[in-house]
Image (tube, rainbow, N blue to C red):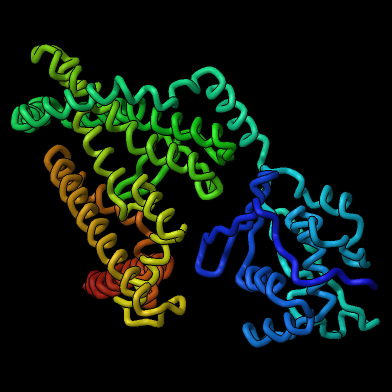
Length: 479
């Protein structure tokens, strides 16, 4: 078998993106395909461009991971890179076809890697050196399929993307930066109104929440927030995603949990933001940040222009407060779904920043081993970020809990307080799991113990009733 010449290099359009401590994405910007890689595969790509001998590559790989590597495995990995159009073929001859590579076209079509709508795993064919086992009586090395699709778009996802393609075709002009020109003076006017009439807004908001029935006002405010803030923000985010050739996973009403159960319009674009180019990322961040700001400016002007005696005055005033909350959320870099957090992750080239920081901070606070090896500087950075994020989340949960308890007990008494405890405990049962693990008793175990206690109590009461009746009956018969 004739081998190709080493070292080899990737095409200029191939970029590596880190999406975890030991996981990467290899993006082919020429075709739009992208592949997931673990740390061994990422290290192997670097070795292929550094050494001109398979023996040197195998030695460096074994020194790094402590696992022997066959020369056959190295060549098959190079074959994958060439079949996926990731190698620079200008100075590289064709990769020799072996029993493991097969027909490139048939293999690619079978595994679905020709579509940019699917994510494939790029793996070393054998991962380690082949070891003879009883499962292979002939002693031959069995190698898994090199490429396997990781995500496949279902039919409903395809329909969602088609619908947003139509929206982009009809209303894509809304996303043009030229619209910032008339919006800037509108935002400035709204800011001036808020600065001048901030005390009036706060006083009237308090009066309205006291004067009107709480339940009706809360439900009306929640519904108008979904249709006048969440829905436009989700639609514009999806249009931006499709305009930059991203894939939308889900769109619709999602049910979440934060202190109490919630339902809202939402959109999930997956890792589309990570795979966008710089222009697409800037557009995504700007839309997520400017949408609540511009809508809030429009609602502020409408509120101030209305009459205090009208219901629309109350309507727009509620939307002003909602817009302030949404914009504050978007400028919070310690929230995993805010636009500023996306910008910070992009700047640091760490797409799992929030997750890594919270895991590292939790391990630090609990006195357990760190989940990943880190340098001193990066460890301090993650712990600082995680501590601030934890304090913000904790203080927000406490504030919302106090408000919920206050209004529920005010309007429903002890029944409202009991309902709050049950709903909060049920919807945050995953957050309470460390308590169950620490105490050694899960909710199922507590339920079993409680049921057993009730059963024993009923049996004891029944036994006591039986023993107390027996002497009484005996005395009557004797008499």
